[in-house]
Length: 208
Image 1 (tube, helix red, strand yellow):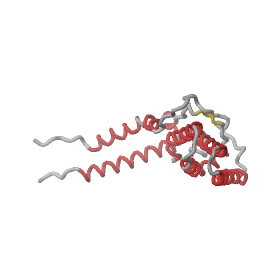
Image 2 (tube, rainbow, N blue to C red):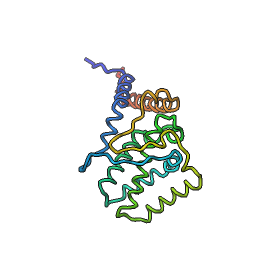
Image 3 (cartoon, helix red, strand yellow):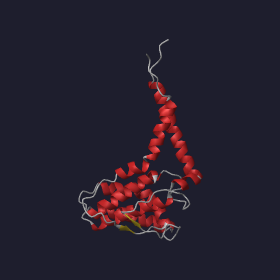
Image 4 (cartoon, rainbow, N blue to C red):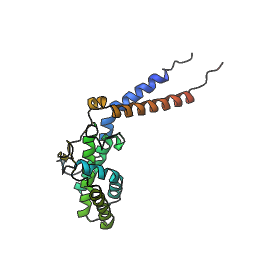
């Protein structure tokens, strides 16, 4: 007797829903653990202009931090927070997440970029190779001065952060923000289409 299989589109839809529902938990799971105190570390606020300048340097900051072997507890927790927040912000890929304060991803962008700045400043006082750190700080300072962006503010510019408190985009705000919702839905549809085509290609051919 030949078995019956669920319709591929139903299976793919179920998988996609599970992915969405598990997003915050899966991101938090990447945070790892700390062997030291669980009290939060304060992170100074970041102006809107500073955020716009630091965003393109985020990759360089994290790459430099990851190459550092002689670290301390504060550095590791700042780094951990920056990477988790970056993931909660969907890795900075959402439209207007940095430039528009009305984006549901703007506050969490402030958080991960403020943490990245804190990581960079922490490296300046640690026992690490100073030249690449100082060069990166100089590049950021020069960009700030050249574009005169340091004093540009937004509603999140005065908000400080803490490694004990993750900033999560609110689903209700995402649903009301056209560009964010369109980006998520289009990405989801593309993923579903790819999975559906893959399922069709792998489905056993029926014998005549």
